[in-house]
Length: 103
Image: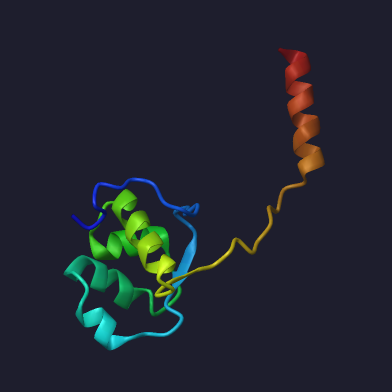
């Protein structure tokens, strides 16, 4: 019911993607279904998709769709991935090439 049968989102939402509420609107929150409201309330503090799913009790796929819907209406902010990998990609490529030569 919450997703209208949808399983896909417009944006990529990983389990570690951070979500927050840019401005909290109590009147808007009062009109939401209980599951969506708990997610919206919890996102007042920047929280990951996985944490929102666990806290609201909704499956991860449903949580992603609800987040996407709220973000489309500018009620939630999806934070871009701002960290880079701590691994040296050249080292990983050399390791891969060496393993391929052994095979």
